[in-house]
Image 1 (cartoon, rainbow, N blue to C red):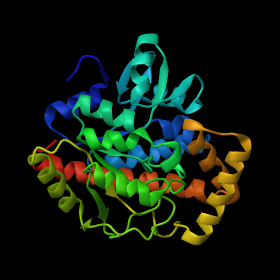
Image 2 (image 1 turned 180 degrees about the vertical axis):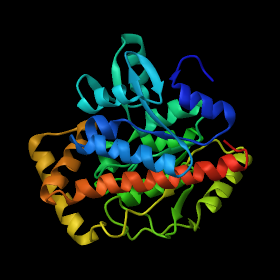
Image 3 (image 1 turned 90 degrees about the vertical axis):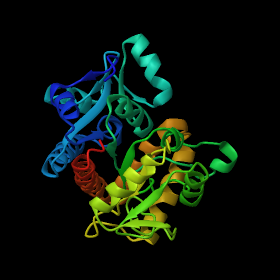
Image 4 (image 1 turned 180 degrees about the horizontal axis):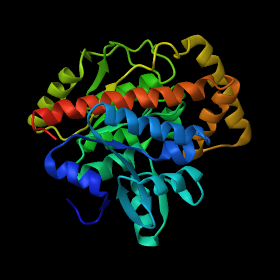
Length: 306
């Protein structure tokens, strides 16, 4: 285990003993969800991972130290959002050199999880190609990270505000397996419906673990995306969601929002436009993904593959 990371005693002990560990990102806590929903989400994810038989490892940069496995006091500090920047892979060295605080995105969390020896990661939805990205080249670093970092990511697909067809096409081009969990359609974060067919599908956590193990046994260095549909009782109709997204995009353009501020802005606007429905669903799908990731990590550990 690299000495460049601060790893909690619980996480370090689990990794040393070959017990299952699940990485969790911190951007969703610091910037993605408002209080008190962010703390609720973090605690529900923690509990879901533990109920599945794994150890949760929330990752962030604290005072210039990449930290794997935040404690309760550190979580409270993170949830305040004060002094934390949204940190992708490109930002890690700057934060370490400058002693800064960063809430890690999917890309940064994957990079640090891999350094720590964690093979499974749960999040809400990955980033991807933004709408209009064919002209702007606004593409999330999450896609490149999946192509080069061998971590299995459990998510409700990509965020619905993105260009999903181009995101799926780019993942295919980069050799990243996208596998549906009990679905043959790419989930679209707040809805199970995207109209985009998936070639791969697994029906159990054990089957997902076998596929993950086979991918890495072949010497393939990329990650995998295990696409878990959002909870059916809270999922939104695709047509209604698209109407809200179109309105939120217009508002973002009018406000001049750009770069990495776009996704948090759009998610906040969707929460307002939906009367809080997307917010409740976001918390629920984070919990669902954490539980599935814990089960997959446990299946991998049972085979000695973590």
